[in-house]
Amino acid sequence: MEIVTHSPTEGVYAATGDYVHAIEVRNAERLLFVAGTMGLDPTGVPGTTLAEQLELIWSNLRAILASADMTVDNIVRLTSYLRDASYAEANAEARVAALGNRAIPTTAIVAETLVSDWLVEIEVTAAG
Figure 1 (cartoon, one colour):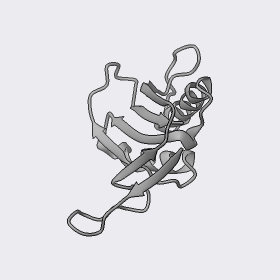
Figure 2 (cartoon, one colour):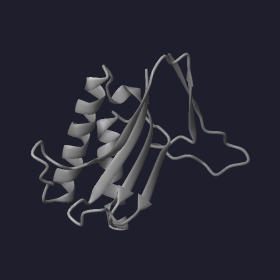
Figure 3 (spheres, helix red, strand yellow):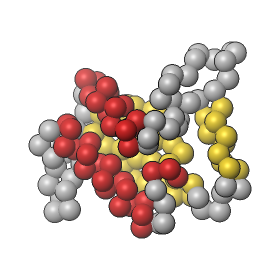
Figure 4 (tube, helix red, strand yellow):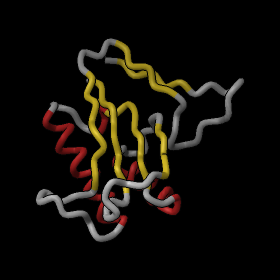
């Protein structure tokens, strides 16, 4: 599998250091579409702080990816659903740390979550 990033510099606004406009996946054999994942512990209890929920989300995503013999290196697209816009910076920092500074196409949306204790929900697409 080959991954090629695309961030044209003409005709579109500039990408940032932690974001690319697109990723082209060549010769992938598998795609994994991960549902929105919350910051819940194994018993279904949400972390009490934003930092705890982000840590749990990334732990949960690593477990889900591992079940498909993948890692965070296979993530090619990510969408974050934030309960509050003020969570954007912490969410971005957690994503950059989890991905080891690898830039991917991302979208962050402020939305009401189904349960008020869920502060962030993240869904990803992975390729292998």
